[in-house]
Length: 355
Image (cartoon, rainbow, N blue to C red; front, side, top):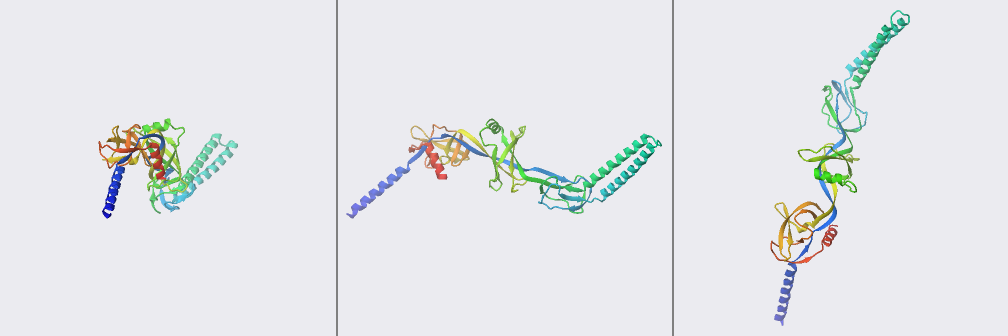
């Protein structure tokens, strides 16, 4: 009795193991499928302020005052620096004195000309001297105004290399000023991508782009592609695009780098599940099942990827049956037992799993 029970248990165990083995040897197979989708491509980019200028001295002299600090936000018209104005104040006083003298001389010449003591030409000469004196006063005022360096627009101050008391030459760099309220982001696009962009611009969202920052996070604001340069670079074959991004939090700074995220719609693109592939020396392969149920490896090239799916550029067609799972368990020319799954069902399952 006991021996019989052991025999039954042993038989049951063997049958169970055999069934498990047979089940394990049944593979899932599907076809590539064509779908309409979108593909987000990344482009290395350079981030620039909408306005970034160098603030330079317009007159020579000693740096008398620095009214701002590095990194400070300033308003348009705000005084940033003062060059010692004494020399230019003296020039203005001298020019004003010359103007006053010329006014007196003109007044005397006019009185004498009215009495026919001197000719009208003498009066005209006196008038010309006064006009010249006024011009000298205006020029002296301009020179004096140059000793105060003001912000031409709202922006953020960059590094200030000179310190108080430094002797400043005309044209010497004092700092830079950046308007970071909006940012320009430049990126290069290949000729085929440019042609796709220009010929398919209607009905797609490519003019709206995202920005991936250096720390791997996505900038919360979206940008608009607004400018394409007029010429291709002969060396790279690329053309530069420019997108404008709002920057309300001033997170973006002039000189940063990032990656533009541009979404491109794709029609009738062949896709397969990523899990159906394997890689050898940076090349990707799938196992194709022939009419005799034998598998053989085939190299494929990838156009791009979306969650759980590869977009196929070449190597297979929608008529090929490919091994969906178990690519590590088979080798070339193995005959397999398989269960076919509709590609749309496979994709739906992948998406539900991802969610």
